[in-house]
Length: 117
Ligand code: SF4
Image (cartoon, rainbow, N blue to C red):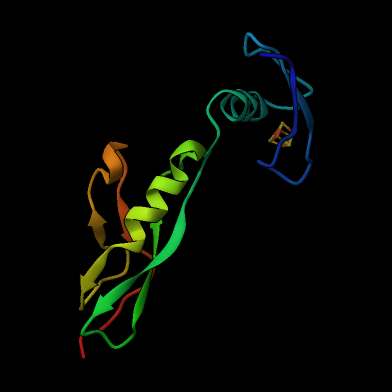
């Protein structure tokens, strides 16, 4: 693994970081940048947002998101799983739709409520 260069996105200052193969971070103005840089270089993660179909609801779709960031490497698998899902109305705001989504230890939650028809 060679040195990685990236921009810290934790705050608007946007420090330019370099992360060594051993995980040493340089260029960070504060400790949050070191944590971000190490995570991003070794195991980049993102919160996944999407939508799934709702049966018998006042809207055809409900927005969903993961409760925590998930590995980028799992995004395609996660999207394929979400595409096959359908939930029954009513759906509450922040309702857990799938516990331990893909065995990642995080939940898939609703981003908005959907009433029953
Ligand atoms: S390292 Fe700290 S100060 Fe710099 S962008 Fe990241 S959070 Fe902001």
